[in-house]
Image (cartoon, rainbow, N blue to C red; front, side, top):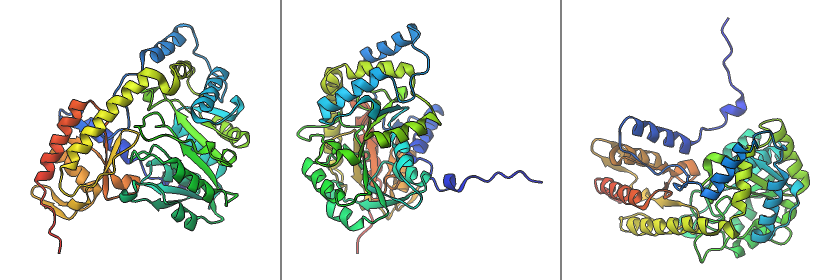
Length: 410
């Protein structure tokens, strides 16, 4: 008798993360001695600010190493409420907050908490790679609404209105966006809110993890702060991006108590509470001043300088289309001009995946194909790396591009 090694149909429906796979492949090449420049992962290259790190170290030294309440310490949830009121103009009480092991867990728990089998999760594309897979894990159906580079990758409220049905349960918005860096202006969010208000079953997850990494004149607006949206919005944020705390694994969700209690229940039967040490560090992070204070504004200034360099560098390339990012630390560039090209010693470049493979093998730069984010015309470049590294990467990419002969159009 053979052992049954079959897997759950739910798991079989989920695709592995391409960003993780490419990052792992690039790391393996580096470890094998290949000088690959890695611009695939969405991770700041800065160290966690010293005041945050010291708070974590002190927590260990002072024996603050035991389980915390499942939803997070009262100290941290109170600090989060203060931050959301002062910075985002949205009011919550500590029992309307759940702290988790990263914003990714917060989003997954929210999707699991509110979706029933057959429900539709509305996801504007380009999207963060995990949103559709989270919907599938909840036995819901991801419904992808494409947005074009000519519209700065922003969801058209009229398209949203035309696609909503009785099955529509969740709309996921991400601003500033991963992978595009687009920021939704308040007037567009207000138009979306007017559409959402017509559908009593429709809830909104507002993923605001990049809120502080934003370049003026762009301004961040929390969806829950719009008239009538507080009751149906689940606001997700965290510490990984703005505070350079990716490895600390800490995020949170805020929303009406009914939904937040459901997220808390799921967490209580999966991971339980987040790290006590990371939570002490997060309290210190929220104490650094408005929008993270000087330490965060220093990082944002560096990101802006890098963005400006790359936009100028890739603007010189024939056929490449650019939507200048207003936030986050990604460029999402349209390279489809080069699709259909044959390259000696490599073969046919016919999509974002083959182009990224070409850049990795012939340019030794690791990037993420746009098809992972729902737009095969583009590739994502993370500029969370030193300017000197980005300069070297741009040179390698330009050199690789110059050996490609674009297909002759009829």
